Image (cartoon, rainbow, N blue to C red):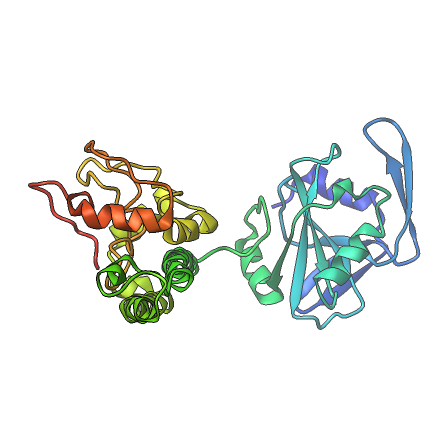
Length: 325
C-alpha cells in the first residue's frame, strides 16, 4: 500500500490525463505538445517539448521504487514493447528504465526516445519483449530492477548448444580447408610416384578425399550427437575464439593448443573422422610435452615429420585417448 506521503505527492502533481493501452493503466504526466522542464544535477535548467505522451505505468515499481516511466507512441496495438535501460547522468551504468509502448519497431522507439534528450549519453541498451511478457513481469507489484526478457533454462540450453555447434564446426571446417589447400600434395603419395607427377597428384587426391568428406560431414553434424559434454567444455575452455579454433584446424603447426593436459601428453582436440595425413586432429601435431624433436614450421615438412615420428601422435603409455575419432 502506498504511504500517505506518497499519495499526497501524487495529488500535489496534477496529471494531464490517463490512458489504457493493451490492459495497462497509464498516468499521463505530460501530454504530446506539452513542455517538460526542470534543473539537472549541475544546476542547469532544461526544457523539452514532448513529442509523445509521457507518464508512468500504474501499479508498477522500478529500480528507484517509483512507478516505471513510459512513452506512449501512436501504434497502441503494437505487440512489442521496447525498454530503454537509461544511463546515469554521466553516461555510464544503469539508472532506470523507460518503456517505449506503441512504437512500430526498435528503431522507431529509439528515435522517439532521443527526440526528448539533447544528449545521447542517456541512451542505454534497448530490450524488446512482448506486451504480454511485460505484464507478467508486473504481476504482484514486485520491484523490477531491470525490465528485460528473462532467459529460461531452455533458452540458455539452446544458446549453449549453438555455441558448441559453432566451435565444433569451426574446427572441422579448418581441417577441411587444409585438406583442400593440400589436396594434390599428400606425403603418402611420395611412396607411389615422384612429387609433381600426375600419378602423385592422383594418389594424393585419393588419400585426402575421405578426410575432406569426413570433415565436411562432421562440420554439419551437431557435436552433441557424438561428443560428451566434457569434451565440448574442453574445447570452449581451451580456445573460446571461433577464429582461433578454425586456425587450429587449418594450421595446427602454427596455432598450438594453449592448455596442456595432465593426462594427455600431446594436447588433443575434437577432430573427427579418418586421419590419412596424420594431422587431421587439430592440435595433435601442435606440441610434444614429453620432450623429443620439435615440429617443423612448414605444412609439408610437418606431415612428413609426424609420419616419421608416429610416437608423437599417440598417448603416452598407461593413458587412453578419450577423444572420439
